[in-house]
Image 1 (spheres, helix red, strand yellow):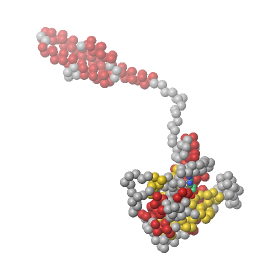
Image 2 (cartoon, helix red, strand yellow; image 1 turned 120 degrees about the horizontal axis):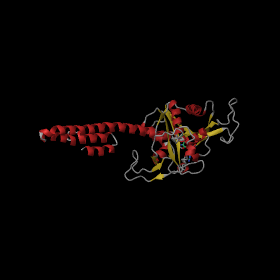
Image 3 (cartoon, protein in one colour; image 1 turned 90 degrees about the vertical axis):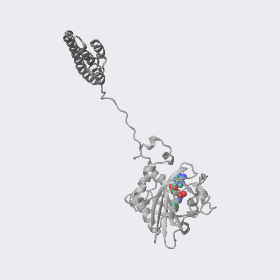
Image 4 (cartoon, rainbow, N blue to C red; image 1 turned 135 degrees about the vertical axis):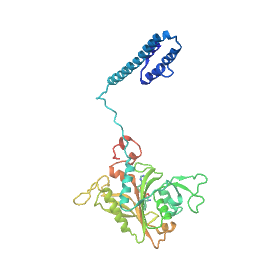
Length: 351
Ligand code: FA5
């Protein structure tokens, strides 16, 4: 037994192994414990000698286990001390992601309009043609439908549009204006919402992308006038680009508003702080004005198509491109930079 023990002891590498060895020799069914049980069967005159021999083996085993225990502690300590820590090691910097400039611009716009008392709503990207065009007073053959080069969609089988339209045609929404329709159909006035989101047009050149983002505004109540629209646009331009910038309307046509106007803001980049005059710069093409988007008073035909009594309520709407705002805000010269996913470009923007 002693030989077997002495052979096994140096093989033990950890506390668990040591415990197993202890059980194997000294446990209830351990081999030394079994030897002890044999004592009763030995003739009395040999018992004394056997007892002494048994005790000697037991002590050797117990002592060996204790000694190995201490050795193992020492070994672990030595291993720990041998570990080297290189204090000059340069860890790789973790690359944190950054917010996309178009998304952060969208969030900033939402915040500005929330502060002005607007609710923020969403709408689907795949839209029924009825909401994207018909209820917005686009005539069936009106060239305006071509004006916003539309992606038409074949509906999946079994899908139906809203009320009363059994054979819907679907489009990728070409603007955020169908959210006006959805809102008026589902909420009675007063309505005061903005709806930012992605829109799609078959457009592709250095300043136009087939996928881009717009933000729509809609305000409907009794006695709403174009003066409220201008005041809101002033407040928005002031909050987003800086106080004191002028806003102007230019008459324009959109089927869903009457009168319709495009709106511009005074170019903040070449404006003299003291005189308020513009010297002209590349960003405003030397005009001192920057085009922002379209707007106007909600057309009575749109109210009728959305179940709102135009003899009681008036309202206005506006819509403009979010990428354009991001380009102005971060001085990005090319719209395409936003969509190329080039990390070197995107990393430069604050989250
Ligand atoms: C409209 O889409 C109207 N729905 C806006 C409107 C809303 C008018 C409410 C009146 C009342 P327009 O097609 O002009 O208007 O587009 C608005 C803005 O979207 C443009 O000023 C431009 O900044 C941006 N835009 C248009 N096409 C693209 C494109 N392909 N890529 C990037 N931005 C675009």
